[in-house]
Image (cartoon, rainbow, N blue to C red; front, side):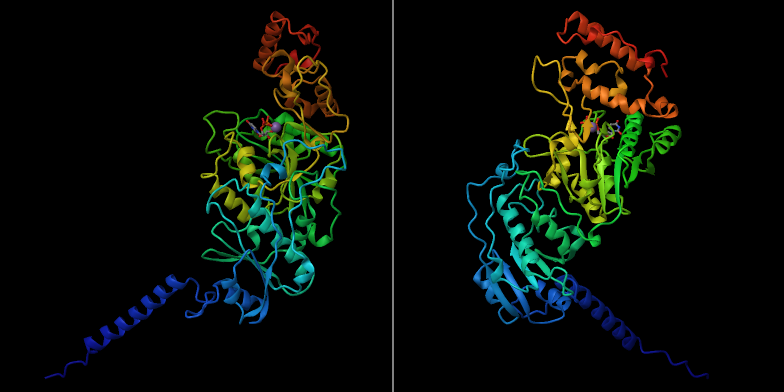
Length: 523
Ligand code: UDP
Ligand code: MN
């Protein structure tokens, strides 16, 4: 009889399998429990979770720690770990409101216009810091519209400590840790600089040169941001003007005139146009000849706008943050023209803009800093954050409530409140004119057709209209073709003229004999 081949004992092999499974499971379970093994502290210590992460990156176990808005227990837990100092922040005036820091109106021309002071620590007492740890007051965790003076105060104290007591320009890294579910203000501490989040602790390694620039700015829009020096070359990278076209061809002519007006200022920057597929290849050709470099995009719906409303797709502007080839972008709506060089405003950080009303900025012209994590955050938050008008301006103001005020004349809104004033003259010293209401290329050259409708006359200005057509007159014929009047637009203007005549509008623009050749050469 042949002998049986020897088989492995079934009991032994299942036991080995069991042991492997147990090992895998335990590893997995412990990882779940404690997050990343590499970065989470060993159990049975009472010092906080961020310590090991920072310690490893600082390269030492003993380092200088400043605590902001933290209590004695938290300081005691760290005493064996470094030189711990509790920072005296100074008392915040309890009556101070966000609207004091972001007032609707300020006297831009007065040098006496000053922001309220936020108390700051005596920086001389806190030197050579390795990490600043702060508890952030969070009224909500995932909320929006953080217009909270106390939160801003803590963020600015940390920023100032890092800059003044840290190691700007030095080789050694400095960290900031924010404790609180809402984290720091991302306008100051960029998401790009987030090292790790462990529970409610947010660990940042901020770029101190950027922070240094931010703490030099006024604490709110209560003052116009003073001119910033062209800081060292390390901070300055590629810069571009950009605009966006989506959903129709209605603004193609506007974008062409905008490019031509920028080029007339002899800019040294790139001109980038984001266009969705509603912009035809012929238009793209014209836009390119006008000076734009084209990038095709998929448009983004404004989640809260009404269907077919004028701003249904204007979250497409969020794609500006995807322009990663540039460190800084000056976005300009396609219904503006530039009348003086804006190049020197590129020194300003995200988000610098001109005011709109209340505490908000106008999103028709704004400086921004492209970044993938910013783009992703904006895309994620658009579902949750309420926009007061359903459009990008409402959304971006909720996302960036801490913005920097540029003078009104950088984005001169064609908007007039006063009744009975038939002049509606625009400011001579404007840098860029923003054509609110019916756009010049949808009107006649002879006068601003916003005069012909009661609802739009607050946007009417012949001097602004004349300024836009000056750009048009300087354009080559092949580009002017993109500004032809459609028969429908022409019919609409004529109809409004008839109505204005019947209503005997006092400004009398309906009497003007129209010579604009575009009414004969209809497209
Ligand atoms: N836009 C566009 N297609 C549209 C509507 C708007 O491309 O159908 C772009 C264009 O760049 C425009 C900007 O979105 O300048 C913002 O819209 P608009 O200027 O009409 O808004 P307003 O400044 O008048 O509020
Ligand atoms: Mn606009």
